[in-house]
Image 1 (tube, rainbow, N blue to C red):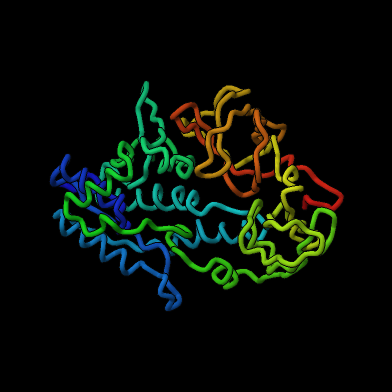
Image 2 (image 1 turned 90 degrees about the vertical axis):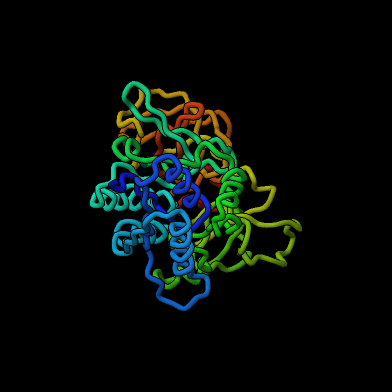
Length: 371
């Protein structure tokens, strides 16, 4: 029979179990596809694409299904990595996983699955889908700790209609147990982290290969120089680690964190616990909007949202601004609202869609915090 379902195989346990579950349900109709999206240009031992494709092949051999291999590195560079770099160049903090899902996993992958005559694609994402009145909805995964709907808010109706998410109904522990039960070699493989498809690169070293660093002063809200930064692109709002600040006279004996970036003066603004209020904002604007239903809801919209993965849902009201952007007011102040990151909206378990954060009402101080 024709391969009617193509599973995106990463070499990890989630996609492997997804393929296994579908093979049990639709024997003879399932195949895998390994997507290579980055051409390694160094000999860093962290590069794992070769290991991943071997693991994916081993799983497919075990399941008795074919593994197709495709190289999407050109598409990844043009539609994901170039935008990733452009955002960092602007001093923003993009989310490459969201870009990856939008441009590669649910666009390029789907196109190639079409070429193979597939009716559906499947991934190992911890999400679910439902159909109500002819419309498809993206739902949170059953495992609250692994729910990945935040990363899939940019998906559209025609893509969701043709997507399957076999592990969305399972807890992570159940997925690993299922893999072990089936004798899959990846049952105890560590989950991947790092930049989507690129892996666990040393971030500053990696980014400096593509963007020229511009070092400058690290200053307190009062304007006191407390250190030197390596380039504003390396830091994100709220960051605590890797600032390299120590021995500051009259400072509190506690960690520093990033409050803002002053692009005009190339300054990184940092503070301590007595500056915590400078990180709190209650309103933001966002654009590059996607509603999964394909239609904007009625405004004002009362719903919940999150401004980063793993954040708990936050009550908010959404309105349309005078330029068509979203204006979001939260019931409670939010910490470290970060331009370039995404805000994703929910109605209980239903992911409504999302947008990219442009600006917020983070408090300013005597030192010009906003660019």
